[in-house]
Structures are given as C-alpha cells and as structure tokens.
Image 1 (cartoon, helix red, strand yellow):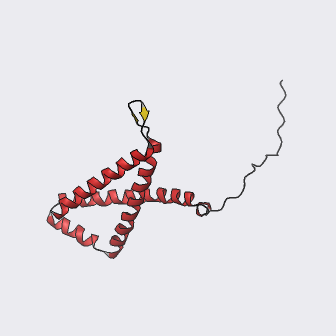
Image 2: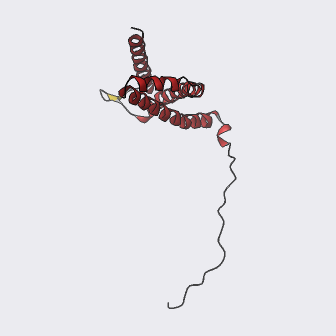
Image 3: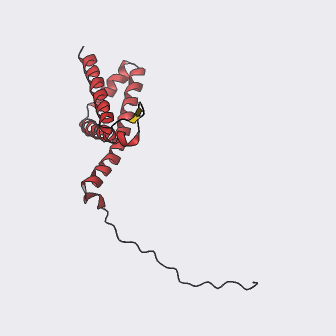
Length: 137
C-alpha cells in the first residue's frame, strides 16, 4: 500500500471520425438549422437598429434626421433588406417549431400541432394588417 502506483507514458487516443467544416451542406435539414442559427444574429441587429431609432427620436429632430441619412447609406440599406428576410425566416421556423416547444391541452385533449402553428400565422397576419393600416392611415 505504501508503494507509489506506476504510471505509463501511453495515453489512448479517442476514436473520432473527421468531420468536414461543411457538414451542414449535406442535408437540407442541417442547412435549415444553420440558417435559423444565423438568423439570430440578424434579429439582434434588428433590435439594435430599433434601439438606435428610438434614441435618435428621443434626442430631437436633428438627431433623427442624422439617423435617417445614415439609414439611407447603401450598406445599411442592404443590411436591413437581408435582415428583413432573415427575420422572416426566423419567424417562420419558430412558428413551425412552436407545436413541438409547447404542449397545449384543451378539455383534457392535446391541441394538434397544426392548429397551434396556424394560430401563430393567423396572429402574425392580423398584427401585420394592423401595422399596415396604421402606417397607411
């Protein structure tokens, strides 16, 4: 018991198969997963952009005009157009995943996933129509 245990220099290697950096291009489901993950960055940009807009509005007309001129820069316009499409992708993928993320019971029975997704899309359409009506009014 008082002897020191003997250690070897040998360290076994893990058996790992090499995975390509482009593994996500092999299947549509993998590609859609990566698109959804990337869309989060654009959603974050959208939040930052809205916060910058609110800040510019709160600081007066000159700050707002400066924000508008900055927003008119071609790079910002392209970024906002790409952001718009990624926000749409993010919303659609979330609405399609919502039935799996939440289980709703009504009168002791589980509500079908298609009904949950359809109610999300319906609410999105109603809110979008309300925003269009407010903007055009």
